Picture 1 (cartoon, rainbow, N blue to C red):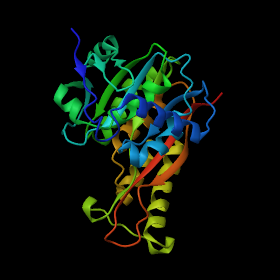
Picture 2: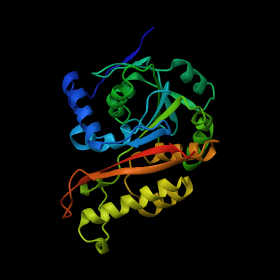
Picture 3: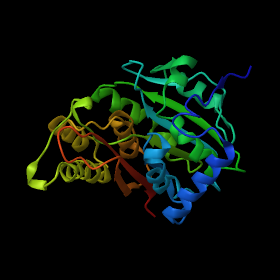
Picture 4: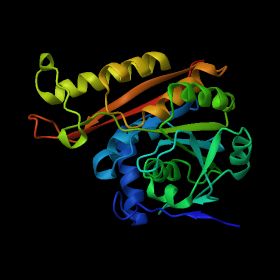
Length: 291
């Protein structure tokens, strides 16, 4: 029986007008001017409203050559629902205004059989925006291609669990038909986020934020999950997708393929000058097979 996850943030976080959405995505992808590569096996991309991070996200999704890919694993953080585990979607189809993405129910069953994953209530699924904000881009890039999604909500998992989930999912990285879409924004700065770390040696606040984010991005590019954990413990940067990114780093560490992450774009929602200001950072990366 079909169980539909509605595009619950369409009409608020992004337009629900299919024509407008399609043309916006086309414009942003064209502006990014990237060459599609069959060696790109995954992306890290933001999940804010498209008026904030839509352009930045194009620098992740614009790398994708959809030709040989038939399955997309979505890894997104949980903003509203607390779980110390990873949760799988119970939906059979994910709707978007520009085309629906069927869920790979067989793969969900296979992963569930590992005994380490919980199932996510449809209401929890629809309340969460982190994976939904990737869907229109994926629907656009994979238009005309037969592709299914495997949505995995990554909860507040421990360091040990990040490694465990990464090891369990690593084998799927070695199948070239699989793709990975990892959802995260970067620094959430300002009193409303309870994060006002400022290193004056970098000049204005927004430059201090950029230096902090770039340090994290550089560490992610090394592919070392332990170094990323150490960075988070030291600076407590408010990277909301820290757990999905960490799980992905462990997957890359334990798979047989040699895959390197490269960041291609960095933006901030606004440039903070005073302690009264606030901003969210957006970074887009491609994870590419090294031949």
